[in-house]
Amino acid sequence: MNCETCVFYEYDEEYEDYYCSVDMDEDDYARLMQESHTSCPFWRDGDEYSVVRHQI
Image (cartoon, rainbow, N blue to C red; front, side, top):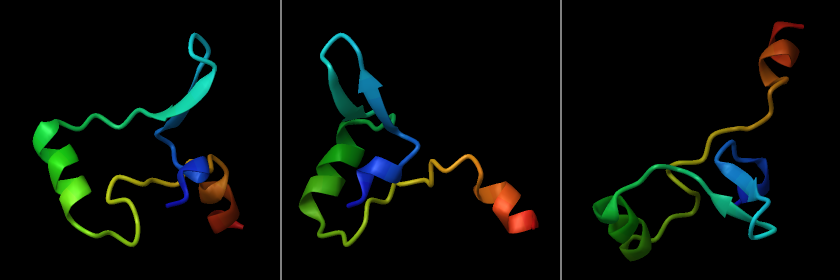
């Protein structure tokens, strides 16, 4: 999974580490851990300029 480019991959200054900030409940997490995924179902492109490049 390519978390580094995900909009939900955020830096926590208190712990000085990155984490996934997606809002998922226990059922979502259990389903994510049980199923085999080739990519994260919650991943969203965090590139703010992708819309601008698309318009050019």
